[in-house]
Amino acid sequence: MDLLHLLNRKPYKIGIALSGGGIKGLCHAGVLKALEENGIKPDIVSGVSAGAVVGALYTDGYSPDEIATLFEDISFRQMTKIQIPDGGFFKIDAFQNFLKKKLRAKTFEELKIPLRVVATDLDKGESVTFTSGSLLEPVIASCSIPVLFSPKEIEGVHYVDGGVLKNFPVSTIRQECEIVIGINASPLVAEKYKPSILNVATRSYHFMFKANILHDKELCDLLIEPVDMGNYETFDVDKGREIFELGYQTTMKILQSKLNGKRIEIEQI
Image (tube, helix red, strand yellow):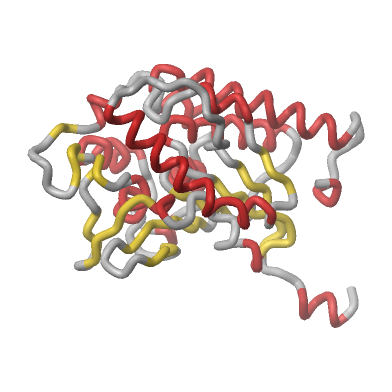
């Protein structure tokens, strides 16, 4: 290996970026399962919103199948509580307690794989990437959809969903990785939708998110974007297993198409 290559060598071989998308984020777990079965595991993970949740559990040592199982028997009502509007219509405390019980690592430093969690600083209007310290609070902040959920306060700063400014966190790891695999759980497909307050609000945010993911999509060496995700709503929690399987099957087809039955070498991505 020549000196120039050594100087330009990046700290991570494979990075995986996980987008937001509510329950649609379970497709991330399906994709991760397919990648693992083909010998591909990340050296670092970046996640926002639902991607931050899946990313935290995965880097904490949960298998993709275990992640899918965790969310099989929950509902939106179980994970939230309506409140007199105080920064948001719903409290997210139940979901925070649920995640607190499941996460074995309490800090980023305890995770088995490095993780980046993206949230939005509501006070300054900036995208913020958490990489160290307490793990739970940044993950919850990254999931706090404005108006629906109250902002998450961390050390005096109010944070909301990272997807407001960066719904596909590829750029947070691009410069440090030889190869970046991006998983977008929220391809924008203008299908029919149920006119509930949740669906109208989240659909509106998805239209806004479209603009901030275009650049990051271009930064991927491999983009996995299950188009049929447009058939699901953000809070279709009863469809979690279907969504997981969609992510798995889509990825297997993509890899088989790229590899044509050959033995996998990561350079082929």
